Image 1: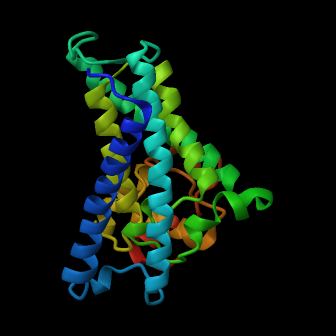
Image 2: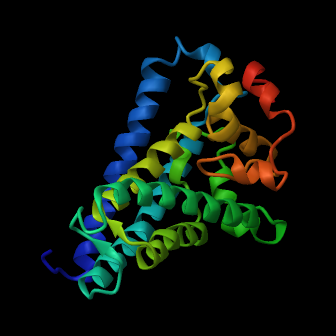
Length: 252
């Protein structure tokens, strides 16, 4: 890998992060709100009309978050160049099977990390300056997926910095995890329920977080703190007791 300056990587990753955000979040908004909005009206989870100022606020916070994530990415690459991380480029170093195992491990670790920091963010003493920006828009949209206040963006970014030092990861695995995170965050903030209630009731909604699950969090604040999986909410009693009924009725 060609070595460049830290600031070169900052600008590079800032551009990549913004492009990922606008392509995935913006593409989802264009498709579901502008193209298919009327035909999917019966699947909407919104209780009130969207405000353009809320979307603007979400985009502004997401751009700020992109700056933080770019700095984290530049730091990771700089440390990789020094041989300090566990990132690697040869897919056969640990075997092809490990690419899949390590990807799943990253998702599980990130979900665990996210659950506990997210729950911490909702403590009254720190909510206002750590997490309020993400809830400021009220009704989530795809643009909300990475709308974080600066302190929260830093804490979120630290995860991938830390994991690159403690888990051997191929660059493909790391990039796939980052794309998965963005796509999943857009999905959970979509504002539309895409799956039939029957399938959600049996396994999708029982074990994986979707739009209804996270919309409940945006309305009730004290439940549903997970990122990908419902495991920690179930285990620690932070799942809304009416959630499974809500998957059928979309009333919560």
